[in-house]
Length: 399
Ligand SMILES: Nc1ncnc2c1ncn2[C@@H]1O[C@H](COP(=O)(O)OP(=O)(O)OP(=O)(O)O)[C@@H](O)[C@H]1O
Image (cartoon, rainbow, N blue to C red; front, side):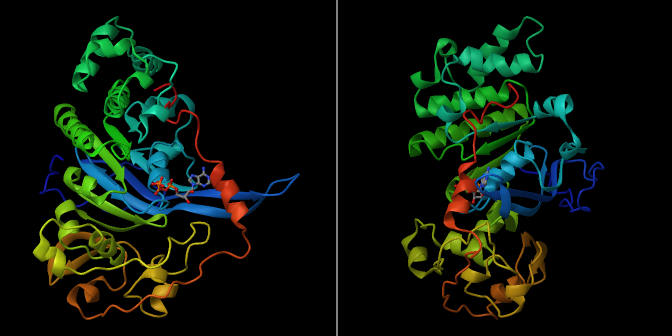
């Protein structure tokens, strides 16, 4: 949405787990080496850990103040877990989350609760994340009270202001979530996030449950609020079209890791990672002359199980440019890539990004490979996955 200061250098990735303040003053959020692994338990009397779901497996990303960062990827690639881990709604297995230079991984109890005021979440399904027994007034006051923001006695004025900001009438205060349409409910969800004056909002699929016409209204609202309040956004979506129009930069996730990251226009115009190329080739182009001639890359096979990710490059089992041995054994790091000597804004986790871009490497047919783990039954994995979620995931320490 707002354009980051182009004169600032791109944030660099520092040593993993460092708890020191980040060097770039405009970096609001600095995620380093983040891992979230969920244990898979088995056993009738004593639970044994028989494996792990590697939901997030080594993510480095920085978000600048006032920026909108779009995070995309197939269902199950770890986007939501990453968003939740950034807000410390999931325990981190490893790594750090520096917010304004403070490592959230090192905070507990009251300190963590105080920090959370600055980082709020907007959920895909507002009905599931808003307590149905509370009126909008109660929902909004809950977080404000928890953070001592109602002491001045001007809470009513603030409630009115919040509703105005999200485009709802004052009469909405006495209503319950089920009395609103989907779009209005999402406005309530946004008002609740705003009620504690955050600087970062993590929006997890904020419009995917809404009708297309309403989606645009909610996206426009988010853009207006950003301009008005100077907010920073991490927007998670599986729909590449949604993310394109609202993001300054976009990150693409595959099986728990970022495989490409670039300024939004660069990413959509010249995707460099084979997975990003495949994702974008599936998005229809309105111009029929372009549509008829452009490259189509079909993704073969399903997303491998995050309980047993492939060795080497995670994408090698589905990659039409896979090169034997190196891709199967060596995990590529996210690195800055220059195409034809022109420094691009891309960071790409592919050994062959330059050779693919220049046409030096040719595509080949992909045969789906079996990447299931024989030591885990489907039941083991399902049991672990069934453990996920809470009744009202939107209620964060009363905020
Ligand atoms: N609490 C949990 N326990 C075990 N596994 C989990 C838990 N939460 C998520 N997972 C698993 O981690 C992987 C990543 O899930 P996540 O929800 O983060 O993906 P996603 O990209 O957001 O997908 P979607 O868009 O479908 O939500 C999935 O395999 C998911 O089933």
